[in-house]
Amino acid sequence: MSFCAIIAASETPATLGWLWQGVLLIVLVCLSGLFSGSESVLFSLSQHQLDQYRRSSNPLRRAAAALMRAPKRTLMTILLGNTTVNVLLFAVTYVLSHSLEPQLGWWVTPVSAAFSILVVLVGGEVIPKVLAVSLADRLAPISAAVVSAAAVVLTPINVVLNLVFIEPLTRLLFGHKGGESHVHRITTDELKSLLELNAHRGWFTRTEDLYLREAIDLHDLKVGDIMTPRVEMQAFDIARPVEELRQMMRATRLTKIPVYEGSIDNILGWIYAKVLFFEPDRPLRELLTPVRFVPQVISCEQLLKHFRDTRSQIAIVVDEFGGVAGLVTLEDVIEEIVGDIYDPEDQPDEPELQRVSDTEYDVSGRLSLHYWAETFGIARLTNKVATVGGLVMHELGRTPSVGDVVRIANLELRVTRMRGWRVERLRLRLLDGEGGAEDAT
Image 1 (cartoon, one colour):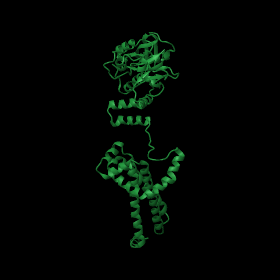
Image 2 (tube, rainbow, N blue to C red):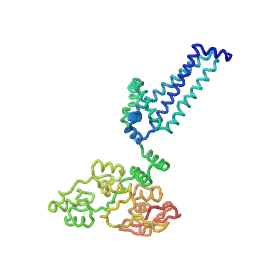
Image 3 (cartoon, rainbow, N blue to C red):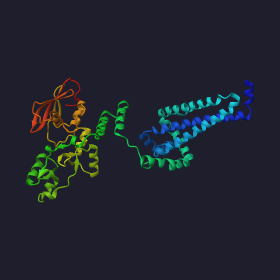
């Protein structure tokens, strides 16, 4: 067909139909891009941005926040709208190419099909999503308008699909209703990944980042790692004179002490100093308050939940056989996050970790094994002990003596002081002169 013949044919009704179909194709590609981009825009908004949108004076930004209150419904609307548009786009492409076959030849249909797929992938998916991720905040009002309008049009279809297919399949596969209340809970690994990303983005200060990491690690830290061990507990035998208890409280300045009968494994309750001194004439047994017990194998995260649910701040720790292993307080958990909390009432004591030279440290046998391993970059070797002194005893396989040496990785631990059967102080030496506790003093 000559060029003049094509120009002449352009004035026919068939040609006008082709033009309208071409315009319709352009509109459908734009709608496909809007739906695809809106998905990326709305679901990339942070919770902080959504909170700002809810307070915004812009009605479209408020609409975006409202849409994300029901993310499942919003996603269904976007996917349904995008699928409908793409189906219409391919249908119009086929009709247009089929009508052009008599004039241009059989090759028009396969070429137009391949071209339409390329257009949908690039113009309807790749480009919109790239722009959406880069300009999410600016494009949010546009996306909210598009999705809100589509939600009104597609609501009947959305409801039918949800009732007939989505809800039954969700119950069948997951055993619960697929309502909006079923929210994905972020995992510990996801939180750690966010903190790794913070190292590059700088969302938090170094101190905030450290606190967050320690808080996340509470999930893996056991109560036995942070408790005051049984041998160091201050406790009182109810068979002894009450005056001795008053003297103990004056000497230790403790506000409460566990009271036991016969053996420390048989704890009767707590005695509070203010109760003891304000009611001196009442029998001691009547002044006791109940004790709460926690297993030493639960995590510090579970311990925090226990303290919150029971509105308490202290508990007795028991081992697997039901014997008393020690006691733990809310302060012990907090100190795992923020470090030691100075209390002017505390008695002065030797530091748990003190730098002696560039390659040597003086270490308390009571130093938490978890803290020691983190400080010196050593993989934790066992979960059977909670302190460095316990680790030395575990590695030796016997009760240590002064002068005993244990080597772990690039560290040498030498026992320098014993108290009874317990390791009190050790000298730690870096064998290769690298690493160490940067913040130890």
